[in-house]
Image 1 (cartoon, rainbow, N blue to C red):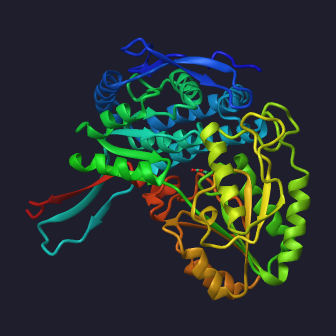
Image 2 (cartoon, protein in one colour):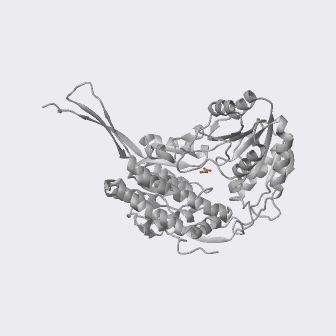
Length: 484
Ligand code: SIN
């Protein structure tokens, strides 16, 4: 496998590649075979404080650049990411496990945020509001919030960082990012390309670490850091929100989901099947927006079940760097054990395994693509985010019933439904309590779209013009003395 010059071992702080202050490092493993890929600087509190100081210093000059000047650098970075997409994808597949074709897709998806925000930064408009006095004008301007922190997950080690960093840098903010312990190499490779693209020292800092709590605490408690953006579990998001409270930081939290995927009796079943396969089995089921509960109208249940089994039967499981494989390994032992436990619990509660249901014969961290029937909405597997290649089928009889079931969760990230009835499309789209709804569409992610959830799935939006707002502060200028 070609790992290239972009495989880095050091942290990236203030434009320099540097060992951790403690001189300690930690190992990064390939989940497909357990082999060691690299030893990476294990950053702690001192490194975090150094990175925050560097980002603070860089903020003055970076935010003073015109949006056009910042956009030029982001576009140079975008071009480099695309030019090196295969090297980046190889690193991503090695540390995370997803099939190479999905990894290349992720690099392009990640890079698309650079292009989108390079363009969008030029459209940060203010307002002029009429005032009741002729001598006064009311103006609104938008300014970058300052130094931002990002804590990013292992399931999209490139795209989740790019979604945050592109918006932050386009807005004129600087950033200190902590990638997930399992997947720091993609973030470091991104920084190497940022350096090559001419992003100035201190504007982007990357802190690999095995001490997430220590670095997280240093980021959230710093009064210099004005905003935190986090993608990960609701449990950790809640903790980070508490830690941000004393310094009243702005937060964007993209947290857990429990996506319903509803197939109505009037759906185009083949289209629904395409959407379901993409939504459920992308990244081996390890996305926050994966179909987690598949509600199927009782009248089409036999057809859907048969078609799903046919598709799942053909899926190839194995290392992501082998071209024909569709499903890679799960990220670590804890992930496999969690999926195994959820499946076993569902079976004890009366679920029927239609295909799969166990670890894969390939061994290690591979799990069989699985279809479970006879699931009910109160089973543990339907209450939890599965984060594995397990499809759970729940039959329903009416629209009102399925909306109530779909909304019966504390989460509200993504939902999907398939129907060809225009009235139903509108009714159900409005009734689902989710931040994002895919209608006759199983893949909803795009740089142009506001990604984010309601309820316990998070705060704020990433992507689109709304994602840029999350890195800007509004300032009201009251201008008097106009009259002669
Ligand atoms: C996620 O799983 O958090 C993000 C998935 C996506 O952007 O499509």
